[in-house]
Amino acid sequence: MAESVPTVNVLAYIPSPPRGVWDIGPFPLRAYAVCIILGIVFAIWLGEKRWKERGGQAGMVLDVAMFAVPFGLIGGRLYHVATDWDKYFGPGGNPGDWWKIWQGGLGIWGAVALGAVGAWIGCRIYKVPLPAFGDAIAPGILAAQAIGRLGNYFNQELYGRETTMPWGLEIYERFDGIKPDMMNGVSSGVVIKVVQPTFLYEMIWNLLGVAALLYLDRKFRIGHGRLFALYVAIYCFGRFWVELLRDDEATHIAGIRINSFTSAIVFACAVAYFLLATKGRETAEQIRAGVERPWPWQLAALRAYGAAGAAVAVEKATEESESPAESSPDGNDSATDGDNSSESEGSAPGETETSKAEATKSADLGKNDS
Image (cartoon, rainbow, N blue to C red; front, side, top):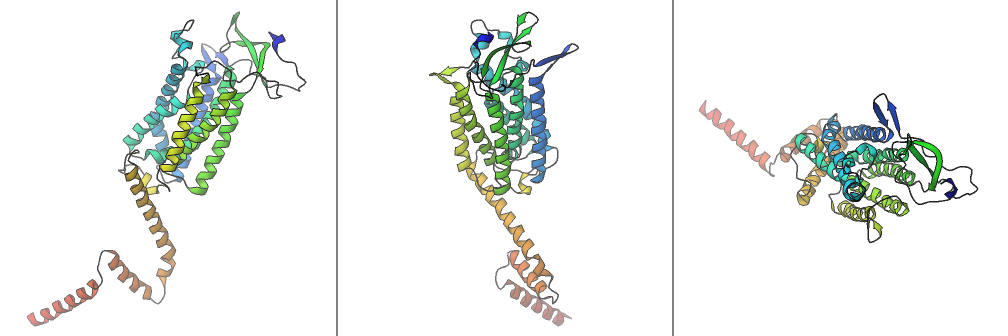
């Protein structure tokens, strides 16, 4: 098979790992599983950090993740099995392998969709706003996807068409003893083909997306789930183009990979939400646990809720800017503050004078009674 590899004058192609599984006693250590776990841990750490910076309670991201992560793994596997049905249940398939997640195969859209259901359950239990929670964890999720792509590298999967580019990826023969096993075997050193490293393209795109999300959030203080929608749009845009380069096994519709359709549809939905959702950002008071708030799909109520939070933020900023003037040494400001405070409590104009007149009248009546 080695003769089929194009011979070009390049310094070196990117080598694939010789193996993706190491047996430690009776337990196999799989690089794919390690990458997935590292990605989850990083996403929780970054999400926790961002949640506390926004005024949320410490430990809340981990608490909600206890619901979201299992749902996400199940959703990712179900999406993969649904879109690669013939691989498991078609002619020559092995139905018993459909649940073996460690062999690779997680659909990110299924993971995000069902993971969002798990996060919604956790947020309802702890009474924290799901849109704000999504904004906090969005950059971490995209970073986790980048880390997870390294697992595809070790598994020699999700690669593109053959290429002669200098950064082409070498795909090796692997054997488990004497039996060919591309997933669990060890490389024989024979290069089957040199392909586009689409796992690397997607990983780089994801990392650029993480940097963009962090920058845009810091500059524009995006809230109400719009940063999460932006994450989805960024990922889908890049994934659409990466899918056009891939040549591995996949389900096609009208000659187009099914993931290309999914990318386009989800991208349009994410952009629509970003444009239509409530602008601005939740206050620290609005994201603390135990506060009742509208449901995510109650857009009108969410807008009113967001506007109320913005009004509170403006009021606080105004009070802070006026606080130095309240400590005037001549005492005139304190008297003014007293008048303002009485008016702010709902007193209509003239109520103060009326109260003074009533107080004087009561004093005169007291004198007469004595």
